[in-house]
Image (cartoon, rainbow, N blue to C red; front, side, top):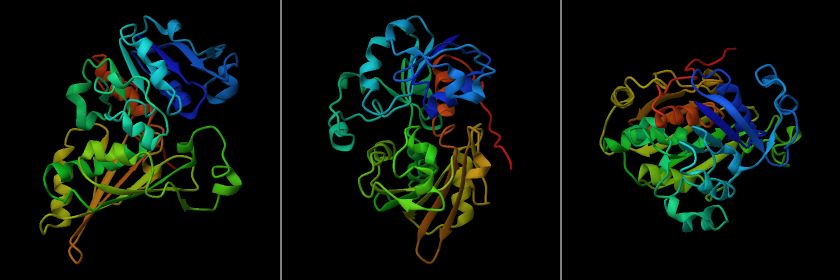
Amino acid sequence: MKAGVVGASGYLGGELLRLLAGHPAFEVEAVQADSSAGAPLGELHPGLAPAYAGRVLEALDPAALVGLDVVFVAVPAGRSHAIVPPLLGEVRCVVDLGADFRLRDASAYERWYGFTHGAPDLLGRAVYGLPELFRPALRGADLVAAPGCYPTAACLALAPLLSAGAIDRAGIVVDAASGTSGAGRSLTAATHHAAANESFCAYGLVNHRHTPEMEQVLGAELLFTPHLAPMTRGILATCYATASAPTSTDEVLALLERSYAGEPFVQVAERPPATRDAYGANTCLLSARYDRRTGRVLVLAALDNLVKGGAGQAIQAANLACGLDETLGLSALGMAP
């Protein structure tokens, strides 16, 4: 099957190309960028040079993608809603790794993202690309909205407990920390090494744009606070909720284990997860505790923001949409040390 990557110069684009280079069914036919058009791929992503020898980044041109089986669009928020529409019907499946098709309410983009959506009629057509929660709808989908990295962690942590009625739907708190690669390749004052190294800070207080995405998927109200951690990859989400009835740590863990039994890319364990354990893997690691003193449930989720929180999950969703085994080209094994 023929694949294309739009936005290939960024971190997510590079991770897509790394994973696609080992995919047994998808063959990369088109590699497009914007400001980096004309540059050798190996100069922007030196580690990928052996797999893409002589490949040069092409200018962004939807017409050049017609006839491909799958196109991955990895551009900043506010741009893909203009790129995706002309591709629908011309390619088998479009997977948007940005935010432009995640929310159902077009007006939410003005409030949370600051732009007016140019294709609101497509918001109901896009399938949210979190396979563990939306697998049936992903099969045969022609437009996939790949989840954000923070929402992937929080939704996988909380969805089973909410579905079972084990926790209240109000008063949920999600504290999560991400590595600097989550901010993308473009340098900012906050992500410069001198600012991020040996520092830990919160940002996006009470108005982070991933909040409505989490609330939409979970059907619950929550307070989300993201943090920037001095590491390159990884997300650790610590989620707090009030138990709807007295329970125990064993019962909460058992609920998670039942919910994700047989899932290839979710692992539940008693041991608290660490971001390093998911490094390079398309895996979300979960653990949980019940605090009898406060009646609160604590759920921890760790993942690689560029893989299960980004490119890997996008490929997992594309596999399903194209009728393939969803594990193709992906690994559940983290790199260590």
